[in-house]
Length: 631
Image (cartoon, rainbow, N blue to C red; front, side, top):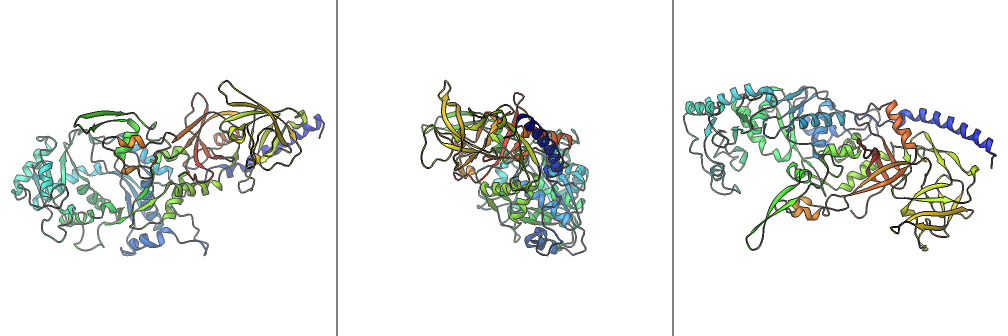
């Protein structure tokens, strides 16, 4: 062993070497910049797999238009909630399709319901699109066209294609065949009212002479044509009176607002959208979409060459979670439900909030997935790998996690994190044994760079790596058992241990050992350890099908997993975490999701949460190192 002076020289040499290695690794450690398209293939390689936009459903959709048609798509979210993982597919399809064909994609807010819209949703949607690496050609709003839409509504009345209806919601349901739409259908008694009368009534709606539910403008579609089995042709509403009518852009100008079925196809025409792509729940809407455009002369009848073309692909669902805004809101805000007892009495049940907010990492909103630390490009790669068809894509969370794990494995450095620390004192360690170790960020050298790891006679190991009683099948630390410490040149043998007042092992005494260990465990030096709070995440529900639970009377609350979030308040991590934080602060990544991420050795992948707790860094587990078999 080197004498003390030589140890100091070696330490200084190692420090300089480490500084040089960190600078060399600077670019490699930055999160990768997501590409604007969802494909990661290279067109220069003949062996590269086909681009998702050049095969299958998307290729067929492209070929339905003449090849010289400029591609113009749009992503049209309603700004009444936070986007979820299914929207990641919609964003990737619309923006990616436009980019693949040298076209443009609009972000168009469908802001036609001021009662449910909020500025926080507008901002979040814009930020999420940017996070995913896309930039809209233009940001537009349905409200940009409110004046023109109103004029077209009057024109529809003049063409005898719309009328004002005063039926109640119950009466309208009966006209449409009852609650199941299977009964006899019949026309509204106002359907044949004179055109001028409908115009007068519609203007009265506009002037605020009717309360919500007292009058609607309905499109006069068809009761007898071949599409009579399609509810989208059963005189859909075009305008309604809205009670909370203050609009974020138009103020109190309007008392009435257009519906999605009236607005969507017309705005597509105004913006000269070539391919209006949506999910299959809107498949029946294609008929009413085309009907309205033709009724107002926005496209050549029976031709797709002019005007927008609606086509539908299968939506993305994830098992084991919920994506419904209304149900997520119950989790976020809590809810009071009424439960009917067998004796006929009604019992009120108060269910408190189950998560911390819409960005709680246990949810599958995109703001939650971003906060959990899932890289944008990993999510896009996952969507691309699923492909695009007209079938519903129902995937298990384990498949998503596996895809994310594969991405992180090739892109983040390794650090030692101890979730539940026990101090180990190596009694016979000498001053010469205490040193700075130069350790690569990745043992396989896929990720370049090295960091300095301090080693002294006192280290932390995880409680899961020690047993009070030994057994033949157990290879980690136990009394009189030898185990290796990663990157340390000697093994250690436990000779004794002590417990705290609660009965938990708090300290282990050990000595150096020449025995060959059967396994190695990770550790963190006590003197340089950084205290952190670590959060591990598991499924929010016990069942794989939470959408089938009782959401009306609150039965879903009984299925919440009490271990969906496990918090380790006394976790410690090696000082290398500070190096990564400094690296990002001095040289911030140009990526759209600039978070410090790393692989915690033998534990999982983590990121630093944007907010501290009690002035401590908080770590969120992105995914485990391997699939949890309990799932």
